[in-house]
Amino acid sequence: MTSQEEAFSILRKWRDESAQLEYSDVIPWENSKGETFTIANGQRPTRIVDVSPGSVILRVDESPETRELELLGATFEYGDARESPFRDLPSEQYVCWLEIELADGRLIVFAERSE
Image 1 (cartoon, rainbow, N blue to C red):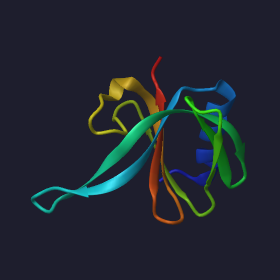
Image 2 (cartoon, rainbow, N blue to C red):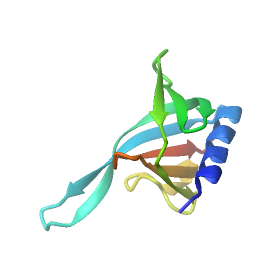
Image 3 (tube, helix red, strand yellow):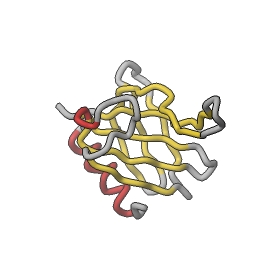
């Protein structure tokens, strides 16, 4: 597990560097054998616009609109390029990623793309 302080530090770094990120909602999926997996529900190019205590504002690259994501009560998990945040894509496409479980139980991932 990654502390909230570390997670917000990563988010601020991405904001300051205008890092190329991919954002995805992660959803549970059950196969025909009854095994449960998590899958990414579409990866969208995203940039962090602002980080404040308890929330982050992001912009999906194709849209002029921003979206605020409430992070109060969230838990965080950081990973690096040794493993891909998305099962179906090679890890070499990413520098690192931050998985966030929101207070309502939804799971999202921000992944920094390799240039």
